[in-house]
Amino acid sequence: MDVHITLEGRGDLAAQVYRQLLDAILDGRLRSGERLPPTRELARRLEISRNTVAVAYDRLVADGFLVGRAGAGTFVSAEPVRGRAAPKGVVRPRAFWREIDAPEAMQGARYDFRVGVPDPRLFPMETWRRLVARELRASAAMYNRSAGYQPLREAISRHIGISRSVHAGPDDVLITNGAQQALDLIGRVLIEPGTCVAVEEPGYPPARALFRSLGARVAGVPVDAEGIDVQAIPRAARIVYVTPSHQFPLGTPMSLARRAALLAWAERRRAVVIEDDYDSEFRFGERPLEPLQSLDRAGRVIYVGSFSKTLLPMLRLGFLVAPASLAPALHAAKRLSDWHSDVPTQAALARFIDEGLLARHIRKATREYAARHAMIAEMLTGDERLRLVPSTAGLHLCARLAPGVSVRPVPGLAVESLEAYCGNSPA
Figure 1 (cartoon, rainbow, N blue to C red):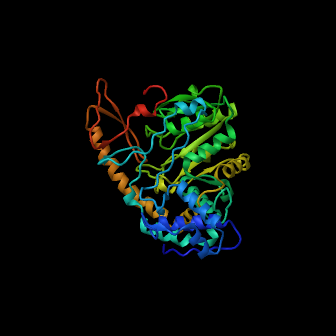
Figure 2 (cartoon, helix red, strand yellow):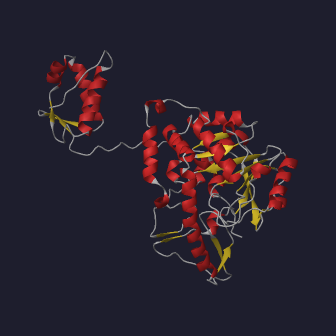
Figure 3 (cartoon, helix red, strand yellow):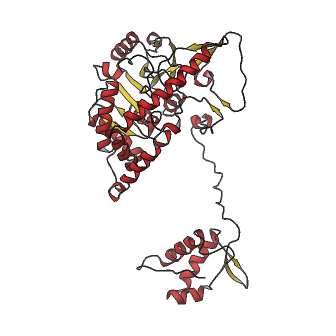
């Protein structure tokens, strides 16, 4: 065995021998089938107790990295080490978690038309790599504020103030791991068992499932050409989740009259409105209507945003802007959930925004997506079997089947059915 072992201090010597032998096995310095020195010999070399070396060997044998052969010695295992299965157990999750189906992300198809997936080829990967490398420094290894990296909070508040007219200072912004965690934090703070949460129908399934997992009674509310039907919201609802800028999945924007009606309803019912503005950065027509958050005068709207669509889903960065009355509770929920989001990524994104790279990327991507949007809309409009739902923003289009028309899967073509976004049955 040609492996040098260095023992430090008076710590657990057996653990040190175990760790260094394991590292040698994993990085190939100890090869499969190689014989290790007898415990007595290695103990003499290291000037430690033979029992200490024996303990390290026994642990490696138990973990499958070494194998003992009677009369021959101890060898590095020739078989690949496989993790041992956890016990089957008898503990059962709550009923919701026995029923929920959360499929993993699908692999790309040759013709991929899945909803809300940005084109990674448009992302300036080399620039991003440079920014991340710049932020990988010792100071970034420390714990950070739960609300997020302060320069990023400042950059986001400026960006959404200019691009979306959102009223928010840096201290109003809370950084999250994507929009989904933002919804989770809001739910933790506001939902009690039995709380009625109204969602759009059709709508975003992960939000619906998340609210149910927290003990909410979720009620689907129909959506028409102007957005959610405010008159159909249950009187018992205390939270309403909407996607007003680009209704998910239909794609229509909520009219100004309907926005005003929803805010008035929330004020009367003392309810909270969660506004998910997930991809309205990409506009192909007129200037978008003001977000609910900027029209809100009573402090009942929580604005949720994400960079998963504008940049890349892998970044897992989102944010929320909440009324000041909710900020302390939301910050505490974030701290209890995962303490804080990844600091180097937050710092890189702050520079990306401040150096004008986000605005440049959005302009470039919008031109590309607008061309694709127009091409697909023209094709769908020319097909008498489909009824295109008008849309002037975002990364997807929706079309309804004409009466009596059915479809079947096409190999290599990835599309999604409207039925998957309905809690009951598609309208």
